[in-house]
Image 1 (tube, rainbow, N blue to C red):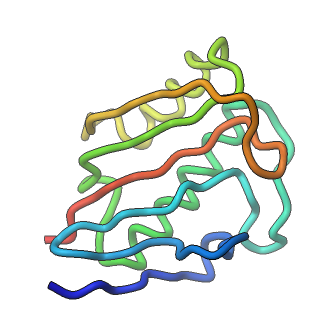
Image 2: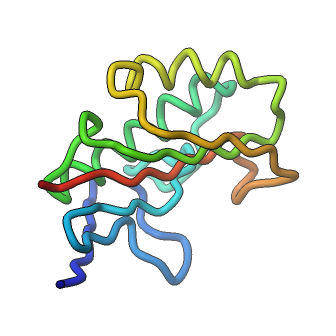
Length: 127
């Protein structure tokens, strides 16, 4: 069993002591992504729909860098600072993961890094 770091310039650089993703034993575990623009490292402007779209684009880039894809996602965890925005987040989420329908948890949290309103992390297969 080998542990492999996954990193790409197409997703924001880690803002702490962690990696964008780790491949281990046929799985790719992504770190949580917020709506940072990978080119600038700054939060994008917009509502939960816009932020969710950016988050999922960032995650898609990490998955692809790790020889996986959104089609291989088996588990998702969503963190929202306002659970009343669940429907808007869910609409965008369904565009990206609606066909796959991975297991998912959605958690309401008080705050997220850099003032984000949504954060998502994924687990996908690499086989």
